Length: 323
Length: 295
View 1 (tube, helix red, strand yellow):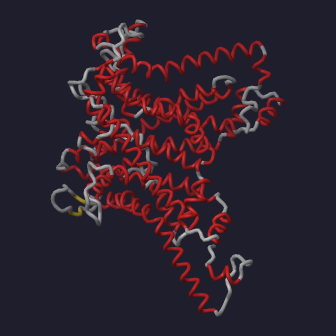
View 2: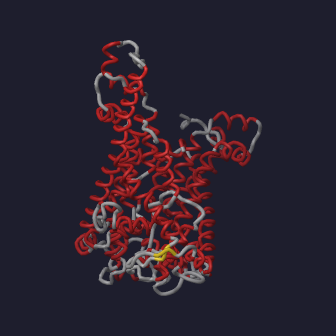
View 3: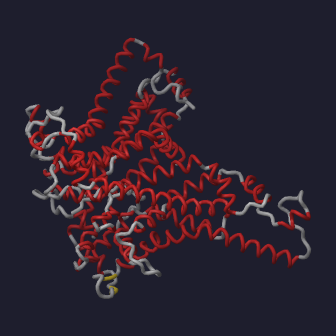
């Protein structure tokens, strides 16, 4: 605690104790000091509190309120109770959107979680050039997401794209990539994995470097094979990192549905999704907003968002189509 | 700590002839795969920029361009106004970084060292915002920025629309607070006996001790705002005020932009961050590693 000048003058040695002239005065000065301390603390907090209140807590509350309202952003909004929720639950595309989201999340987990772990395991064994591998795997993370998306769009291009050129060089039939309904989802997951796996790999490597060497020595003496060493030493020791990254991954891919939206690009000619190429966008609702917000279905998307069961951290790396 | 210590496979195993062979094979395989997967796309981007449009349109792409037209970069710079948009992005990034640092350091300092009433509740409220994706609050956040409650100003198309929401960064507040928590209170107490005020303590004691965490927060703030796409796309509709990412996505639909110029634009947009990464890769990667271990 901070001392005030009189205390120091009167009793310089006894830091932290105050002199007690009489009960009530002491209580009053203590209260005053506490108030002053708090006031100062809140001065430091003020800017942060204001930013959070205006741009984080208020939009959250507003989002919830809006989900119960019909609003065209021209006239005053009116409360419609649970109508929006009912409407979106009745919308057959809502279920499709959920299935697509889960499919994307599942695939992204499979690639984005497992692949970096295996890569980190292998790199960690290297005795040379480990640093170069770390840099290489993190390079795509440093690209602005729009650059990686546009770049991969050129790779995937069914006409003059690089991938089909490679296929034809190998005398294999050309593929539709993002324009084939079967491959579209995988293609998107690959882009997302490519541009984001660097972070996970670096974190796994940090975890691997922290495993005590004695453990490996001990199990090796007992005759454990490499696979047994991974199972009984590496994975248990990595529990914490594995768990944290699993959570991060689930949450960020669920939230990253908007990353799926670049698919929308590819359907300038053809459609990408089974049922509706526009789905992820529809759940975003933002397109309508930019159209001038006069769509009467405007309230749906918002409800859709609030029904999202899994909250997620801010993944500002989101890539989205400019529609 | 244990960097030089053994890993999954012991050095003795690797020294055996069989081990050596397998090691070399795996190492070479990984090296080739990494070059193909992570480096080659970047090479392709730069090389496609210097090719002629005719060469780009060939059905069999050339690995090495027949002619090197470096002037494409100059053309893209002028025609697509890459410089203007890069400058915009840099301005938003630096401004956002300063504001984030000021606001979040002050808040973390108050929460960690001044410990006001309800401090824990406030911290919990801030952390709760981490649970929600920015995308989920897009519409209400947009409406808020278009008409800020109480004051009623419209921040759209101004830098403040990016800066102020970015300052509400719970992650920054949290790691700063955790770092400040480790600074002994005795240091601050003795400073206050010497007559230092709260601000002096922050400026002269806490901040100099917090250089590592400030570096990490700064780097990630700048990278984050440089890479941000969705939010700037929404709030900066005026083409003149757009960031490089938003501008590129708009230009990718413009018919007057040739493909090689587009590649040049993409390459130019990536250069600043890649350069930053090459300079600061040590602190970026170790900041990330530390984050993984401390959770």
